[in-house]
Amino acid sequence: MIPTTIVFRGLEPSEALRSAALKHTERLERFAGDILTCRVAIESVERRHHQGRRFNASVHVVMDGCELDASNEPALDPRYEDPYCAIADAFDAVRRRVQDRVRRRRGDVKSHAGRPPEQGAT
Image 1 (cartoon, rainbow, N blue to C red):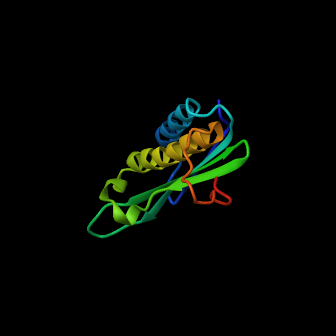
Image 2: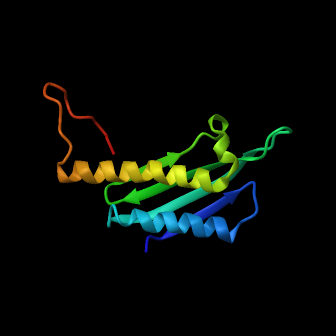
């Protein structure tokens, strides 16, 4: 089990949201066994008169040798009126980054001839 911290900003802590975030964190273990910690922030970012509240979710993963971040932009997508969608999208983005990191570490990523490797890529 990955040690996970879940923070709520601008909304009351919810066991249902906490459970959803923990379920997504458990799924990350399938892609990389060397995840050291995971920090999830679920935030209510605004309240509009004509629309519902929008949510932002961000995920910070610490792996052996790197740190990966992912979040969503609630102003761009009306689906983020549902906090579960915001959480799922943030975890999808961090999962792709974890998978890319694992592929690079294994050497599965092809390098382009004549192009220097990226500096500081995580």
